[in-house]
Image 1 (tube, rainbow, N blue to C red):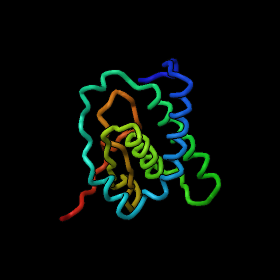
Image 2: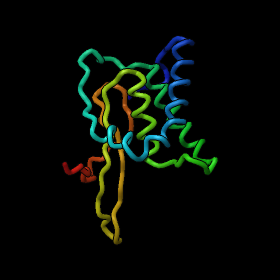
Image 3: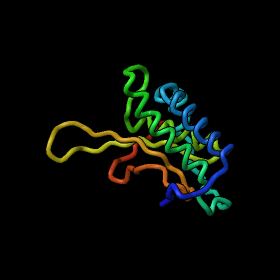
Length: 143
């Protein structure tokens, strides 16, 4: 796991904060329609050059998640849900030039009627992004 003891330059830190905040601000534009579909259809390719965690990417991902939580309190376009956090993380990874994809899955709860849904990022880098959807059945588009 990546810790906060990783060092980074002040300029890199400012860039990370900027990219995390702008990803959080753009997230509502990506939770539906063609943009969401493009993220769902994307494939995450492993990057053999990424052996060590990028501390600036870690900061940007943390900022994006925190910003989504804070923006959701405004009760406007943002919601503190896995989909909004996933889209913000996806946008950060894209801004850093990383290959990533979004997945949405469902599962039946054991003791109540209905369906549970969850979204997550597929990313093959050394940075830990978020919780996965291992117990969810992935939704797929029919072509």
